[in-house]
Amino acid sequence: MELDLALLVVGGVVVLAALVVGGFWARRELQLCPHCAWVVRRVKKGWLRCPRCKKQYGKPARVRP
Ligand SMILES: [Zn+2]
Image (cartoon, rainbow, N blue to C red; front, side, top):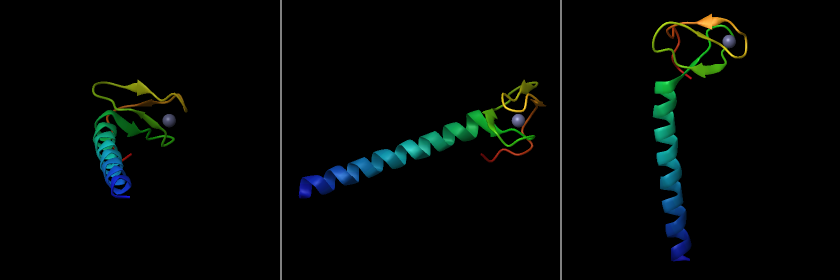
């Protein structure tokens, strides 16, 4: 029983860490399309085209994913 609990705790920590790291990565690499709110690659320089609505988007006006 104690081993099960330990595994559960370790698993929880791993999942939490993955979520935190993934969140940081998403904040850095992704943004929402300003036209259709699709999750798109973050623009670092210039413009990119949204794969969903095919409109161009530039620097993020709204960063929150
Ligand atoms: Zn779009």
